[in-house]
Length: 142
Image (cartoon, rainbow, N blue to C red; front, side, top):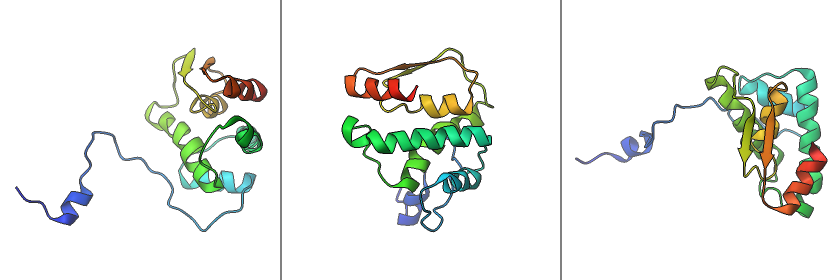
């Protein structure tokens, strides 16, 4: 059976539910206010303290990225969407509940573990990483 090009493009080839990620607003200047704006557009909300913790983590990640080879995503908007929002978005489907303790194997720069810990501070979290440089970074963050 032949499908038209538009039908091929619109089909989803897996069973994952569609997520509501914010559409790209005009380029935002990196900052705490922009971080909050991205989360609000994605229909996610954190407390003021949680936003501050996430912003501090972001600043540490940016400052240490070249030294520890933590991520290849450099632009602020992409970091917020792909690292922070994508990690926390799962909580919408799990109704804000995660097993505790939670083991994040191969956490790299702390994803998804650190954003999840910021969003749910009461969970016990174990970060497991095999690369020494990244372990050094995680030790500084925690």
